[in-house]
Image (cartoon, rainbow, N blue to C red):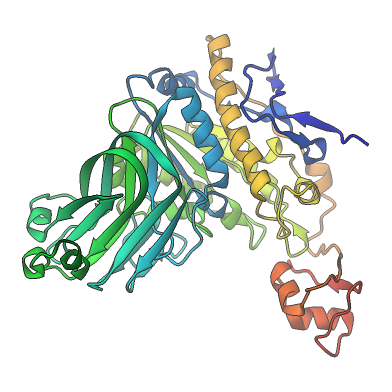
Length: 496
């Protein structure tokens, strides 16, 4: 039997006073199940101020003579670059490839890597990430910093698909002071040596190198590794003892195309942006035009509530970004539907409303991912269809492909919609009203969860998957031992 499905290319635009036909043909030609409840009426970046959206559109119109730089801040949904890779690739296909953007060494930071490149490290490294508030080490724009005093240290990056042959500008961001060790930058077989004498003469916390060719791999070699590589007198090269690394930016030379920086850190809340110590300094080098603040999951997930100071935190972040570039276009996003401990995170709808209200008062733009992706109760549909993970929080690879594609198409729809309606002052799609459903949720509502035991299941694995404890599962099911029987039906205790 044929499944009921639709193509992502089929978009319906909605406005309180205007109805528009689909405005472009989207390159992802995969069908997704209608059970995901994607509502394409919300497939826009909404705005409340014509001057704001005209500036946004102008960034894309001028891309052939003025490189368009996008900062996409976020949490675990962004760190691995599943969704942002789709958005980046589609935008660069349309407007030109301005370069790869920022990369970080996930191995030294002891976390999971990007889908686009792998990282390894040599030696002992300390690290800090933006979800650790306050951070143990100053943070840069990527939200991850690693540092070492090990003279055998090295950071290595390998691109799964080599970057195409071109003339590149490679920028290394690091802490440059009287204790900074000399280092080598290796881009494939090209070697760039930075002695302590050369570093002291920079008077800045970054270096730039020109490189022509494909890029398969990059490495940074610190301290004694320099001596091995070039046979030099290490005393003349290295008199520093430390190396603190913030990330590497890879851009194509020239001033055309799109550079899309994916700046995700797992577990990061919205306020993490305020703890990026070197944000202003490094952003002035990257010259961003658009910033997306794609947070919320870690702000509301654990207690199903919105902290009273969250709106003021977001306002402070917006001010900080505007201080970097007063003409920057800023986009706030809502979360997707969330499910944890057997409960829907019902406050996600209120979070959407708060973000929408802030977008209006702060004169920024709003991407309503919550309603676009199906709204309340839709995450279970995404899971049933194989587009969300069992935790009810994260998506699968194909789920993130849908998110990245829809962000791209929302951008494209907005640009075309504004061009088709040049006199339009605002574009608002009224949010969906879930109040009748939400009223049914009492504070102590704990829906039952059952699990049918399959081969390989263990109590410890189930406790991790459902965010509960082995003891709680055994108590709920009257289990005296840890033994499970295939086909056994377990009641999984849920939390608040």
